[in-house]
Image 1 (cartoon, rainbow, N blue to C red):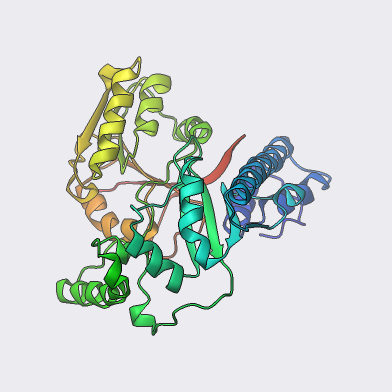
Image 2 (cartoon, rainbow, N blue to C red):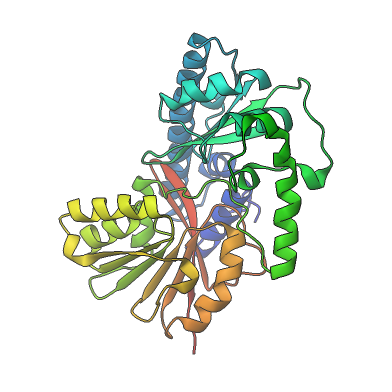
Length: 362
């Protein structure tokens, strides 16, 4: 939708922001709307909230980026902050890019680990050697309240140029730990994975990070958009550390069930549940999302990679009881394979998203 046209109702405003979020133009569109005359009453507060969210995310990530670059320099790693995040002020994700030399990857990982910024898998010497020689970038994460991501972008120095079928990534090298002496053998793992997928007629999840948590400050407004209440049973598929189920129980008084396949995250979620004042309303189950029992749920909450959701949704729709709200939230467009009844833009001081809702039908 063209933000230059006067917006006269909430539906048009929501549609404008849904598109702006997907196009990574929230800051630009919001500032444009604030210059318009004739906006209806709710338009200005939402545009102001969007501008404030972008500014807060940009400021926070500029700080993390600067801190990381300083720490890397102290460790003898030449690092360059990419993008003027604070000046731009329109960042929508808690993510920042830093350029380093390929040869400095091991030292950079050691340095950033002390800041709690880690690779999504255990980085053995062989994995470091292979990825530093073949990859163009490596995504790191800090499991804080907003799940901060730092992308290490390798400089244009010499690298091992492999044919595309042999360009193994993090999801491939994670399959096995190889001795350092045969680090180059990781190149064979991508063809093996592809062959296995074809034989089984099933694709593996191709996401690098097992858990990207919803920013804590965003959870309450997201759940408010669903009109959640004590009468509900919320089921979070891929609950990670349990932050959504914990706040659902504590703030909205509903039963909340978290389903998670990662044993380490299950343990963390159970610890958080035990410490919650609403622990009697929270249950954490160690199982895969595709096998979870759905019959109790009135709300099924999903913040999962779109590739995985595409595989799960037909089964979820078939197994959910009629009237259950099927909910996903994601900034990017989910594509034509997903059909939802409503799309709701949500802004908080430290995040933004689009909540998409579909009601399960008989």
